Length: 236
Ligand SMILES: NC(=O)c1ccc[n+]([C@@H]2O[C@H](COP(=O)([O-])OP(=O)(O)OC[C@H]3O[C@@H](n4cnc5c(N)ncnc54)[C@H](OP(=O)(O)O)[C@@H]3O)[C@@H](O)[C@H]2O)c1
Image (tube, rainbow, N blue to C red; front, side, top):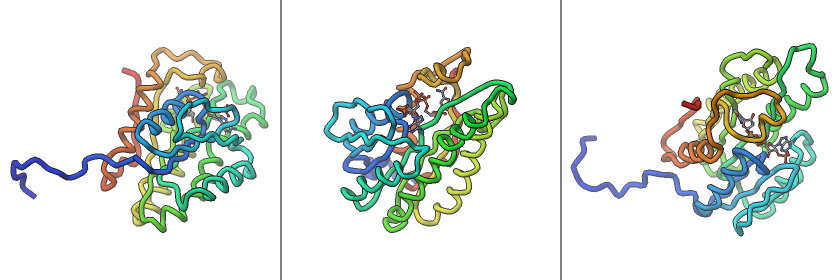
């Protein structure tokens, strides 16, 4: 349609005020910053992590959850659904990295990595999709990684988990698009969080955590007629 020159009154961003959001991995890094931003937008935010997420905001509730434990996930979503009929936004963010030669990565560590980075997004997504389908709306953001797009030296476990997240996300996007549900996979490069304390590698350049969280928020806030299905972002 041609532009008329009139000032448009159409909403250009998705309204987050009053929306119900669930963020996994809310105790530090990207997840913590995103919870703070979502609260500032008036969303009702539930943070799932093992350590307490200390956000002094009335709109935030921390639910102690180890996402490698399906019963923990069940319990947390039972609490959420005892308060709300559906979830509007799920951010599958909880994750960690281990790097090293394949023979140095213990099979149990690799199993925990897959459970956290890949299986937990599947389990959490299963919880929110029925309500989103009823509503014919919703947004699911999967925090993957550049390591989910290309293999890195030492990344035989981590890259496999994040390639898996991107495959999961792409297929889910195709499944849910017809229901008005947006699925978006964000592939960040190195970001200044506790991730590197555990991972044991030193990145050359880093994005600031808050800036990355703002970037994720800007995708979430796109009009709900737009589907940014997969996006990479790196430090300049
Ligand atoms: N930082 C980077 O450079 C970078 C780049 C690309 C992608 N990513 C991805 O971004 C996501 C967030 O990482 P981050 O950089 O913000 O690192 P971070 O500061 O270490 O945060 C990781 C979060 O995941 C949670 N988590 C880990 N294992 C968990 C479990 N079993 N159950 C529940 N929560 C768990 C942690 O909470 P608890 O320890 O309290 O449970 C923490 O809140 C991850 O998926 C990571 O792979 C990070």
